[in-house]
Length: 242
Ligand SMILES: Nc1ncnc2c1ncn2[C@@H]1O[C@H](COP(=O)(O)OP(=O)(O)OP(=O)(O)O)[C@@H](O)[C@H]1O
Ligand SMILES: [Mg+2]
Image (cartoon, rainbow, N blue to C red; front, side, top):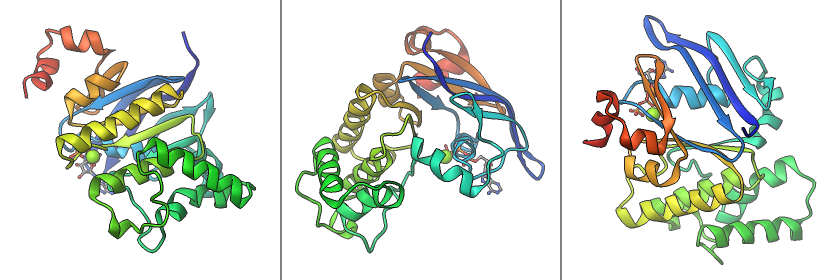
């Protein structure tokens, strides 16, 4: 079996009396794409936010490549986040920065690359997201689908081991959905592992190797995409028929 790049062990998290995670276990292998499904409010986003240190867990362990990261402080998380990238639902672009500066931002922050080297990298990812030559546009000049793709480009520019996607296709029309999923496939082909949180079952099935369902604070289903499609469990059928 491939190397485990991310492991969640017995994660517990509550907001007051709202016990969101009650012992979540999850393993992500190198290069693998995992779909994380679950009803609204089951804690999928909180789980991704916990992995990148935007939320503290109450109990359990989060290991990135075998090293615990759940107790790191904000400064210690900075280098980890270049390897463990979180693609925000909105794209979360800086409105006052051009497409080039939005994508290049992590390179200016975290590397000593020269401007020509940075330009080359940005131009390479713009090709990947089908926005070649659009460096100088501002986020307000872009459609919602394009903004999401630029957000994805920024999430992968540091060549992270893992990309966490929180509903990347939500709110997109079918053409833009296909566009975003095709970029996710290209990133998978480049070797990035991913967790894909979504309500978009067809996209999850077309991209993912495994499917997890979060329910009542635990991973209630964990199987290959084939096992998911063929399962007779009511829990699974519920997703396939809606
Ligand atoms: N900062 C917070 N303070 C208090 N409660 C919170 C906070 N963040 C999330 N919650 C609660 O945690 C629960 C899980 O939220 P989360 O956003 O992870 O759900 P989700 O599975 O991503 O849902 P959706 O599919 O609708 O995006 C919800 O009940 C939410 O209200
Ligand atoms: Mg969510």
